[in-house]
Image (cartoon, one colour):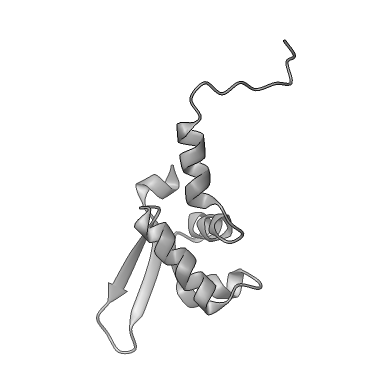
Length: 91
């Protein structure tokens, strides 16, 4: 048996993680949130070159639904929304 071959006995956790973070933008969003702790969506958009507002919104909603990020909305005018990583997202 070669040392270069990796045998995974239980692929479920790995495949689950890949299903959550797959795509072009999610890892970038998670990385920025890990570095900056709490970020508003406009700051995320400025830090991710090439992402559209619609794509950012979609990716944030998917990450929120998976429990990776937390969305905090403050009742003020204009509305203020901040994103941060949950414990699951940090792990």
